[in-house]
Length: 308
Length: 289
View 1: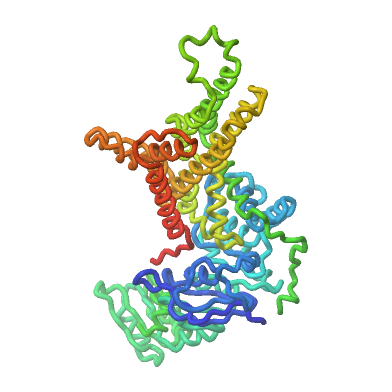
View 2: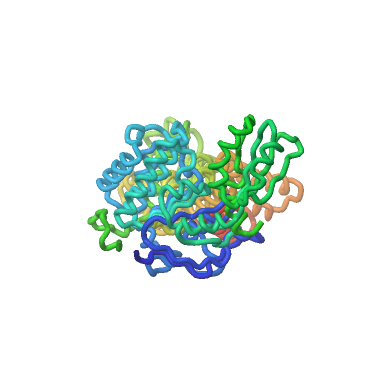
């Protein structure tokens, strides 16, 4: 692994709003996942490392060179933004070729590259349709195509799987993994943990503009497992159900809802708890309406990490 | 795995820096403008004055042949710098230029803001100034076709129809005036349209701004002049300022009783203001939720 992206005390704020705060980080080749809830600072971080916005404090270096106004570096970066960035009246083909023109390729090369990129994302048959007629998933794939069309060494993808169907997601994930095998550097941001998990073990957790954790995903998971989990069960007789597992060591707290049809259980061993649950239901013949885990999402992970 | 051991093959062709990195933006802008409804009709209508003035030059050189058509004095079709000045500063041509701006200039930046395209431009090897050049040259392209090119054609047709260089010898500076004024009016309108285009994400609003501000400034002048009878209020009017500076450039008497330089300063100030606003508005943005 070699060092590709390096940031030092990177900070960015918009008036009184803090976008990113004192981020010092090193990113190596391969896939790195940037995780964080909406508004955490992921897009700000990605725009700073692609040189699109200027940091208030700090430095960004790509392959040892500063990125800001270093236009030669922009040729080796492919950026897929989170928001749609299309001229709706353009066709997919026109969109890709017009952006390739900005890379100063010859016209033959532009056609070949556009063809390849659209084939990769399986849009070649729809290339002459105007973008406004594209579905959400097709738009995502088109954005992805423009990021890879010039064969960049560094691919930066901001929420690339948003709005894609499961099949499309799987294809893009497979593609991203193939780029890793080719030796490229891929940075993918998402607020959905399983999406990132499917691509890489290396993640960076961002929250409120700060880096909360960085490293192997298992390490982060372990960190989360040291914190109790909350499980909500909606059933016909919550008090009877509670009496069945109240003596278990891994059950820390039990709360009954005011509506008297559900209970909240706090446990420090979720796996053990879930393995016991079906037998308890069967033994006591309790009708279960719903089992949910209110804190089983990324926001909860951050809540644990920030000690909320 | 290091980059040197990469499995993918990079394009091994020569990646030229490109003399005109803004060219793809300009070409696309021109192409999009021609796709707009009624634009072609409007554009060709704006060339009508050029055809009329060309016919005027021809008639002035063949006065005897057309004597049967002309009643009264013939001075008005004498080809001289005043004739060129009247072509460049006539109300109709200026109005048509503003209409061209409405069609070709309104969406230039506002569409990029609307469609979030700036992040795609600026994540590529494209400098901010190239982006502005690319956009401005769309306007320059269309406005030169109705100013510089007809101006030069009229000048050279005058030489051809007269069959001598006498006209050129009499007014050697006229060619510079034609080029100078074309650059001035095109440059000003480029700043004017880009500036207004950067103020809104809605192309329609921008079109209204472009047209409205031009007309409103002239109406304002009319109102104040009507009340105070002071010609200095012409400084409020974009059209009057262009005509005032145009008259100076063509070495003609200015239409208002104040120095052309004041008008020039007003136009220059608008351009500087536009430049500052553009610099601030066109940049990488991040929406903080």
